[in-house]
Length: 69
Image (cartoon, rainbow, N blue to C red; front, side):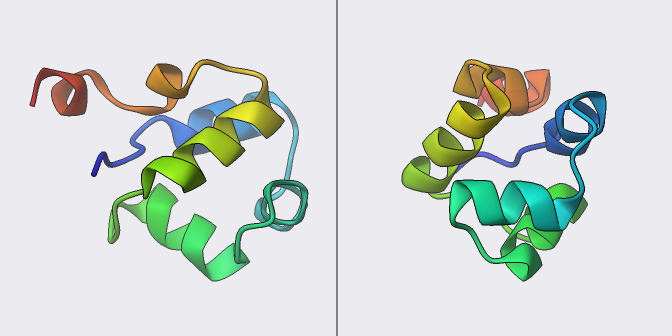
């Protein structure tokens, strides 16, 4: 399961708070915080939901180191 190392950057570029993104993606805000801090990895379904709300390809949320793994 990938770590979303670029999630915070993309979220901030969209001018969304963690709460706004969590609500729109139907993800707990605590989960979103853990994903941004790298303390947990994203389930594929969560990755797709976040990418859809942020209007990016899921790969854009994953750092280059994670994609090489």
